[in-house]
Length: 585
Image (cartoon, rainbow, N blue to C red; front, top):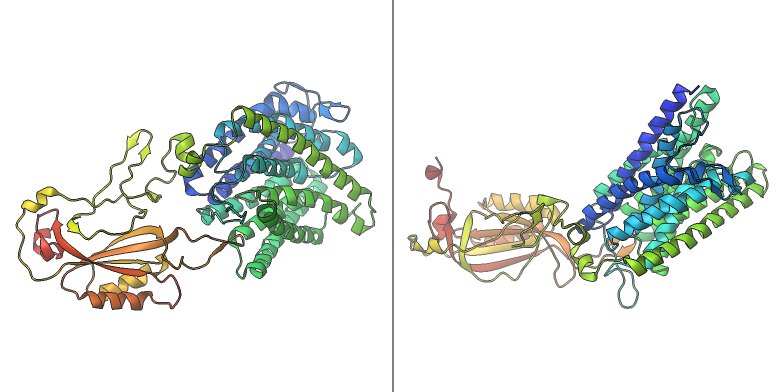
């Protein structure tokens, strides 16, 4: 007789752990560049798809089938056997499937922005079919580590460290992204394109982790189980909160300001670290594990990037590999029944260390062989020109994952699902002007053009000189600038988002403690064509609105404009700039 309560609890946990796929996808997408967003989403989708199928076909049997010498489960193709629990076998299979998919998805972030999707699919199959199920059998399937008394309640080692170690090996073999290190080996920051997406992913993962750890009881019947669930959820939350706070304090102390992305990684480190011992440590132990996990992840990510020279864009090894191993070992110290700090001696601590080392060796050997074979056959890495243009277009033929929101160069015509987008005009055609020595991306698909037919329209003789004022400054100053210009009668303007820098290379900024090379800083470009309002007044008004006294306030360029033509009426000269209320009526 199956337990309805147990079954429903495990189903809830299954759904929550599945939702972690969305969290990982958002973290990896946000911490990498926009030109690779679609490729990362595709990989996160496909590792769950392939993992689900292969785990059902053979992986589950290898992990939970009758043990062969404590090393591997008896293969059970398509899960035909009877696995006697208090919940239906299919429910248990689904619960374990979403765990298996989590181990595979960790790898994609570390190898992002330069790995072929075909290669990714191959090693995902190997992880889900062989690597994860065999080490999982040792820990959860009645294998030799389980027989020794190894404790990994919800998968700090079985799931996260397996994925983290694989991520490190893959990132090392595939090599660093172009531009990550200079000729002297100095690391360069490559910021992710959206910390907002990254933070959303962290919140999703934190939320779903309550199912990851909590439902690993596989029971919600009786007071003892219910009390245990409460303890697990509390420990999970305390560890994550402590690690987040600790990571913020560490980076604030080290870098002078709290680093956002590293603090977000701290949250994940706390979650990973507590996963092994969430059921057998006290809340004080959970806080200690969270704090130690934060220290490990900050310094671990820095070591991997700066000393080992391994490019891991999302910090997957630091979060999952280092914190997973550390959290598992710390069970030997903080377990309230057998831990060293609670009078249990060194026995459990020794078993925990043995288990961690054994799984590291297993994963390292199998995945080095796998990655080397893939690299020698179909190849791991895309060509340099494909990497530079972005994985979205080179691997999927997708010009942009963000459509109208992405910045594209002037005149570029993106293609989406076989449909070519034409650039839209701005309403005014500039017949001729001095060349503008700026070529930058813009948010809108804008392109200035010359209409030959406009020259046929009558031109009114005016003494007023037409001038163009071109202001480039920081995005944050736009509202102040706009209001100031409005007060002197400037109401017409063209505003675009651009990227660039002046001779001073802009202000110094940092990402994960690494100085960002000032090659393309986000700016706004405000263009005004005027006739009657004195240019010196415009310049002085703009300077007062923009001035902060620091490098990077911006630049103002002034040009002579030969003519302006209003497209709707053909009127030329300064009259083309005036607001004709009667005609509009």
